[in-house]
Image (cartoon, rainbow, N blue to C red; front, side, top):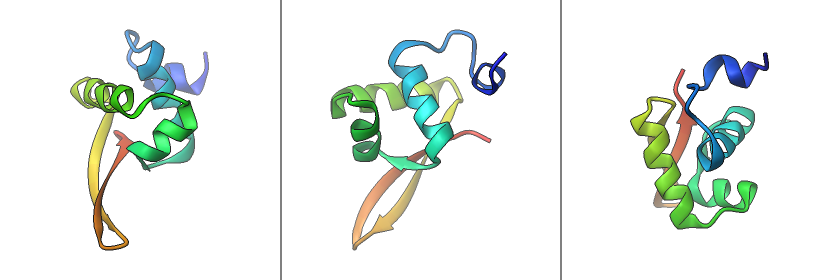
Length: 77
């Protein structure tokens, strides 16, 4: 069993699993970073983040970047 299988809920698959894998490997990431890393569209990333946060797998964090508000997402510890 992989490390991902140990922490991911059993029902997590498709885009949600793909985004969760990137978050697990790279740490907190913005939606733009996730879109580039997964080659998914930004609307798909937004919907997937909503799914991951509702499942308790990820949490959104707000952080200022270059004077702007950037919302980053991280896997739930």
